[in-house]
Image (cartoon, rainbow, N blue to C red; front, side):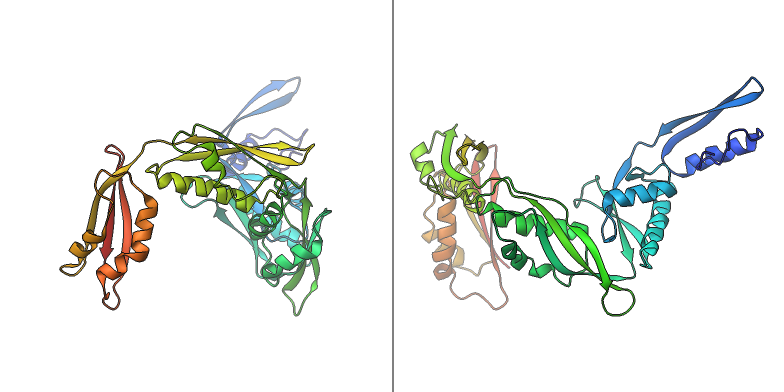
Amino acid sequence: MLPLLKIERGAAFQQAKLIAATNALGDTGAFEEVRYAYRPENGAVTVEFLVKEAPHFRHCIFDNFPFATSEEIVAHVQRQVPLFDGSVPDKGSMIDEVGTALEALAKSHGVTASAQHTQYGRLGSKEFEYMFRLIGPTIQIASVRLSGMAQIPESELVREAKPLLERDFSVVQCRLFGANVFAPYYRERGFLKVDLGDAKAELAQTASGAGRYDVQVTYPVTEGLRYQWDGAQWEGNQTLTAQQLNGLMQLKAGEVANEKKIQASWEAVAKEYSNHGYIRVAVKPAAAFSDDTRKVQYRVQVNEGTQFHMGALRLTGFPQGTPERVQSRWKLKPGDVFDASYVAEFLRKELGPAVGRVPAGAKISETQAVDAAQATVDVLIKME
């Protein structure tokens, strides 16, 4: 018997069953179009189903299922939902059938829960995944381990993992924690190619009372090599020399290639260019790794773009006489090369004395209006 179609080979031919099978395929949402055709052949009937797949299938995430891996979950669900392969269509019954299968899987492990799904994706994006979660039981992280470590003691990262303890277990949240905490910890120590897999959870005994479970999560780690900084090679720079740019680097040759300091170096370059009017400079570094010497050198393409000049200084919302005092202190004149550092310095040191006492509850803000066609920047200072 074909499970989904409920048609058994050798059974008496009944067109009503073909219609029911067609409806069953269509109801899943997996197919945009379903038709069938049949032909008599040597005392039997050969049936052919003609289908057109639905245009959109969404990948599924199983967020808090600590008793099985994603692969095991997919295999289990497939036995109950034959068309399931780890993704579901936007319409139809399949997504609810997956939820029912997940509830049965949880129950087989002694966990009574309902399975609910939500859309998970970047805010504003039309691309998303369906995230399934068990609702009902409390499933908390009791301990954190890391496997595969060789060069950094596990105890160091376990110390960093304290914010995870006693939080509700979530594959997605553990993934974010690994990317935002564990990976930077490694990369700031020169392990620029470190790879962390998704945390694997192991269900422990019921903690305190029915419906509460403790889990241990383990992150698989592939550390890679520890690299040293071997400098930067510059291309496309005209306003600033290679010597000037190298002077902005936060590392010296032979030092551990600390990713945080490397990123700070590119930011320092962009900031220095903004002080010369190049407020839209593009700094594009590409790492060249030498595994033999365990060094990394960056080839940096600089696209300086247009040099911007000062437009107008505009002040709104200030008491009478204040704009004139501010203008008298402002030294960057219309047509001068725009200097972002001057604006920041003026706001920090000159604006306060010029404005004087600010009314209670008032706020002062500064924005910049860029005119790309005229290559000018207006500075807008507002009190509200």
